[in-house]
Length: 374
Image (cartoon, rainbow, N blue to C red):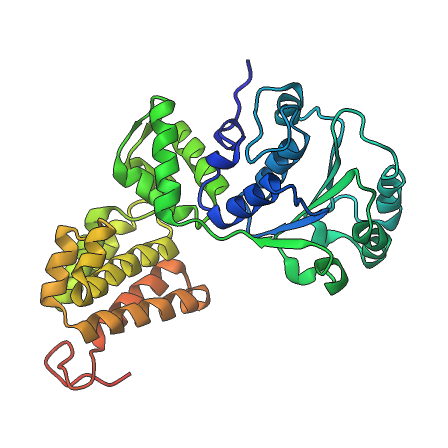
């Protein structure tokens, strides 16, 4: 049997399985329970947060053979057909590849016909913002007054490109980015179910790298399983993503705290012995600096995030609050300027040298001279 990617294998099949979109799930459940299901829904949000998944679950719920309820049963022929992609009354359309008005008219020609299997004929149009202006015009009248047996489920990553006339005819749900904690929790559930060898550091790095997208997190987990031969550990994930090792992060920040230029340059030189993504390296430094600043102002908040490591506590005690803020600002500017540097390594090094050189106004810089104010 061919291998199925984790993102497909673990795609939610019930509303209860959807992670991080409670505001949308609750609204859909209420509409189903009260039998107030609108004829047109628009799900918007970045990639991999659950737009198409929620649309498919809704399609199951309104056509479930056990009756319309807050959760599809998942066992009847209709639910299984939707899960397996063979439910004839769920018409999925990729608007990115069918942008012409003739394509839209061809689809709408069949709207008038009653569903074959279910109670409703569902039109799921993905990346709907890619339709042409003429296609939107062709869709407008049907979207406003569809036959009673038709539901439209639209999904888009760019709702700003949709005409106001389309938006006004839909119930709009904006799906939010998932937190690293939400993604990490789901990755841990999957890793345990798949019998993987993993550590919390590895999953935490993957969760941050997913950048709010559950699908990206699962794809990265798939990649790390292949990279580590079934093992997902912090060191292996760092190697896979081209990130710097944790002891290099420690060494850089401690060198900055101690105004030790030699140790700083030596650490950067050691980093270059292996492939490094220097933008990711800056992100790691910024993450620690954020936790340090948070610890200095609100220690219990850092403890709740489980980010109060030995390094964070040590840096919080030796660095002033203004120093941390200045380092963070320089790091952000370094990320902005890195594409302009001769190469990423020198851009990264110059950013660190700026952190070492400048201090908040009134504090001595390296060598004891008063630092220039920023």
